[in-house]
Image (cartoon, rainbow, N blue to C red):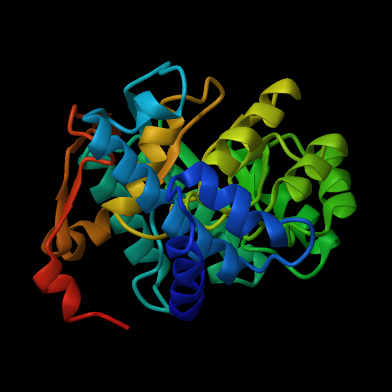
Length: 315
C-alpha cells in the first residue's frame, strides 16, 4: 500500500489541479472498470481523503460542508470487540462487553465463530446477550465462512438471541449465495467491507443480497465513492454502516464527516481500544461520548497530526 501511495502520489503531482475530483477523474478513473485490488483502492482512498482535508482547510470549513447537504453532525457508534489474543476465552469476551457497555456504548460487535465449534459459538452469543441485557444491540460478525450452509446453520443458532445484524456470513463476492442466505434468515445481512468499486455494490443491491452495506471508509476507493454507493443503496431502501478498521483519528473522522451527508447512514464502527495509541499520533475535533461521535467546527477533517511521532512509524 505504501508503494501504491507513492506511485499514485507521483501521478497526482503531475496534475495541474490537485483536487479530489481531478484525482478521481485523471488518476484513479483509469483502473476503476476492472483493475482494482483492495490495496490499490486503499492507497487511492488515503490520497483522496487527504485532498478533501486540504480543500476543507483552504475553505475554512468542516469537511462535511463540502461533501454535500449536511443532515446530521453526529453519528451513533458501535464498539468493535476485536479479540485481544487469538484464543480469548468467553469469560474475557463477556467481561470486555460489560465494561464497554458501562462506558456508554449500547451497541457492540464481536466474532462468535472465534469460539467454534458452533455449540461453543452459540454459548458465547448467549452469554454476551445475558450479560449486556436485552436493550443493548449485539452485532455479530461471522467473518466470511467458507460454506453457505454452515453460515445458515450459525444464523439459525444465533437468531434466538436477537442479534442486531449478521455480518459477512460468506465472502462478499459470492453475491448469489449471499442473496439466498438473506432470503432464509430473519436478521439483517451486512456485507461490503472487503470490496471496492461501485460496480460491486450495484450488483449486491440489484440482487437484493444485503440489508446494510458496510464499505470500508478508507478502503472502498474514496469518499466520493462511498457517498455514491450510499446514494445507490438509498434507492433500494438499504442502509449504510461504514466499516472503519483503521484508526480513531483520520479514519473515524472521515467516516463521521461522510455520514453527515448520508440520509441512510445507520451507525459507524469504532475501536475504543485504539484510542490510547492514536492519541499519541494526533488529535481530532470530534467528541465521542456514550457511543456517539459529535463533530466540531474545525476545518477539513478536524485532525491535527503529530508528525514527529508519526515519523518513527514511517514505512
